[in-house]
Image (cartoon, rainbow, N blue to C red):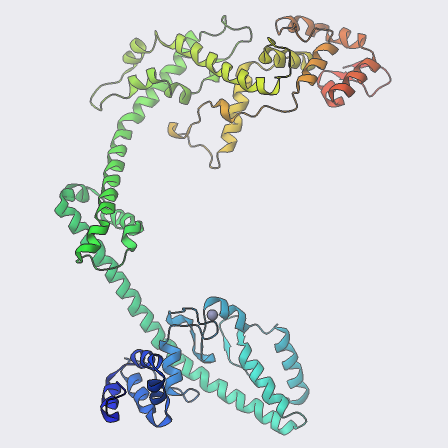
Length: 510
Ligand SMILES: [Zn+2]
């Protein structure tokens, strides 16, 4: 280009816009030299007039700096990209990224600013003015530094310093006036850009929908509510891909994702339809199970510590394949009270027993980890129950442990459970914590404190002893109890729980 005659170069420059000139100035030293020659400032003046609505270059900037400020896309301080027009702080003649903005714009409380104000007030009676941005006002640190320099250069000359403050106030006024004009242009530019983006999105969305129609998804698309369809599509990652959809490569890249999206929408719609059928079935089934349990709960005679019917929640039943198979039938099959009575009635006692046994097994396995040091053959479930009986005079039957396990499950859910059956929680032994406070030594010491043999004591024997707990504890001397406490790490609270107060001179039973 440099080999061309200068007047030809001039003709070319005259039709370019500021962005083109900026890129040219960056391409070579020679071009830069031509463009930055003062006598060639007309190239910039022309270029700036090519930008619709842009206010003329203000007196406090020259044309190349103005063009660079408005159209180069880089932060003046760190040179990172800061492409949006609202990164231009026209009153400070600067373009800053977010970080540099925070670093270079300071409030009136800034120490350097306060010092400067103090110095000025000592000399000049009128209030100094600096350019400020936003509310609460922030000031431009480089401007304050530059002012300080000029101020110090006039040290001792009050008249010159007063003049400096006045000149500065005048320059602030002219900057503010220009900033108003510039902001109007910047706002229009931003609005135009937003509209462009909106139109682009709209066109893209329509193009995707058209493509899906040609793939045979028209019916599915028509069944969707158009505004929720647009919202859902707009959130898809495929929507953020660049390039026009008319490009075959671009569409080929996103076709699979677009089809996956519409398939998901179809599945959701079918799911909603299915829910409408299933919800009444679940409600009826829940009611049936409540009434069945009230009449036929099979556990009372079956277990030494009776487990109430509330131990099994509806969700636990729902996870049984036998019950699901009655509910999970096609939409047109009637699922009635009669169906439940005929198909589930005979199965339920066995299902409930099986469920409780398997939960007990899981619990036992969990307790065994903690109680593994105990003599082989001692059932940890029985040990815990017996120790509870010895300590409290009553034990938690499995149902209560189950209930507590479930309580902690509820609490583990961040959102409060909705009354909807889908949100209910099933029993999960995995999520139950064994309280490390029930140590094997503690359990053994508590049982032995009641003069029972920890290896052979049974929960069946304990209830018979609990009415006589007061005599037993009286018989246990204070020293003996203390010794056991020390060796087993039992606290006074454990014994208070057992109804014994050992803080007094003699063991007293409440
Ligand atoms: Zn920056």
